[in-house]
Length: 225
Image (cartoon, rainbow, N blue to C red):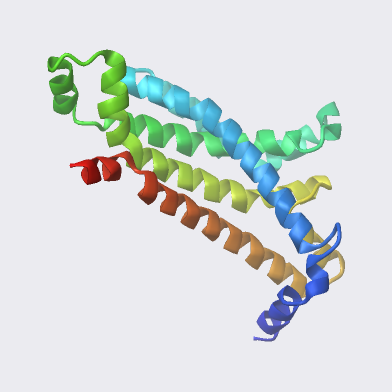
């Protein structure tokens, strides 16, 4: 319990949260790189997954290709980028590595959610005279929404937990709290940094879950009824 107590002491010490090397600044950096990577991954994976799921073909190939990003360790991708001129591009190598890591769960869950929609419901909607766009927006997308959000939460947690690798490239984020603790042989700081990363991942998942429940199209439709 000594390490836990020392880590708690580190977390409640105000001086550890202030300044350019403080936990507050590192937290902001961590949120920035994680948020940017997740936005880029969503911009790439969601439209592709929705389109392929709506068409009902080509998804298996796209998912298998995207899974290459899952098979290759994120740190290995970042290490390769550090051997190229891209190493002087700030957070760009880290963001690319995280995007490759986030795309597979987003694409897979989106495609599976769309193809999992009951075809009888889709055909009934078309029989009512709905256009392809109307079927997509008013039938397929609302029914696929839970699976899509599951993929988003999974990707977000993975990105937040993995964004600590930015410290390995000398950049910011909560990983710098951990690496600074290693450099100082300060086990309490290492433990505290790991706790901060874990708590941030849990908070992000909780926020996304709350937003999902609040703005779910199925929930709004149920209220309207």
